Length: 606
Image (cartoon, rainbow, N blue to C red):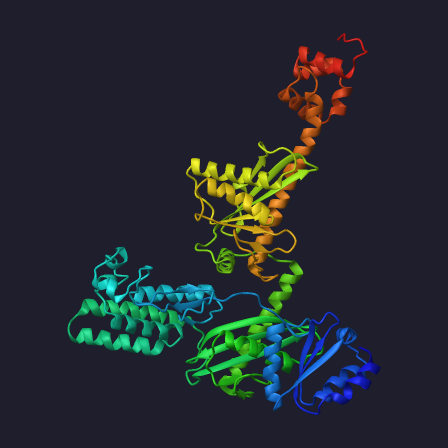
């Protein structure tokens, strides 16, 4: 859109009112969403001013259509802008670098609810508490809960009718004291609900009331001279106090508040967001943002707050920030100068600065090393993304390789606990397929692999990746079904170009986030099977081309040809050897055969 066209056809139609504007390209895709106190003045500034920023100039050159929506006030414009950015993710709006899924503690909607860790929220009426920024912290909390509050872990359908009919029997967890046996009616649903209410408080960070209640109960047991029960409660109290002591205590005077800070560096920004409950930091998360145009720190921090606050389901009514920002919720925005709030803000800045230095250090050194816990988090995310019933600790991936139909081979790589297990890598020579037939080749190698594992009674992988589309996946599933392994492991196909995930029988593929940890792991596995397969195929081609020429000599077999190649490295060198030299390598009779083959017109005397 030219400046002249805008001024002639659009400028006069824009209202002097607050609202949101949208820029579209010629392909009708949305490029940018912005808010304005005065739509006409804001949008006109893009086309009238000389843009010093290269990215802004590029955006203006791509604009084909302008749309706008009037709002009642600037605050409503902020809300609408935020909603549109989240929905459309325009290319020229602020980009948040945060592709992780965070763990939640779920309290299932069922009789005698189970409590466990998950990364996927399902709309089944269950209660999800979180998210937590550290899977280690939430696991530690769940372990403490298991030590202090008996809960069931089984998946039985504990309806009152089933319990009354005596359908279930207590398991080992009951005898170990980890469960009070609701399956046999040893614990009422009301008593179990009271335990769930306690857990709900613990998970939300409200440890004080729970510890006080346990202390009162312990003192009651002491008064009744029931010292054994009192000692058990004392152990539970100590476990909770130990966990509480690990929390960073900011101030006993501050109850609930959120804190946000930002550090900008060139076209990047680093934001830290903290949720403080009962004076303790229960969540702290740092993220990286990319400045796309000329967004101010105030605009970037406002967008980050709007993004992060809902993730943590924060109920705080106060937000501590270094400068005024727009907020989605009706929050009391505090800009502290001294006191406890200033200390919190300084701590937030410290975290943001550390995160910035860490990111830049990794970028400089190209560090990609991950700890075991990192790998486990990625596998848990992959489990959630692919909706697997088990953690994919053992993954295998297959790929075919051939060169113009010759030397057809295949490769399989194995990853265990998220890292390559090279001792379990396997390569295959295709035996039963003639010509180019990737489907039949895939069917053959999958059958050979898992038949052998079954014969040797080896464990099966939780996830099998077939490098190819629906055709290769269907061929692999045919072998899986013939072996009777259907349902015992998840098998998916990986489309080569789109990097889409295909499930057997599904019409539409699953598209994982492009730079998400799950797809990055799958890419790494795919690249590794390509490397392993191509290397094996190259070696096979090389050996096949050379050995065939020697093995074509009547009376010379594969072992003799291999001995000659290992000694002289090439057929050309073999041709240059004298009869005496060949005799010293493979014996007189075979040496004479080889020498006569390459020198038919010469005297064969030694």
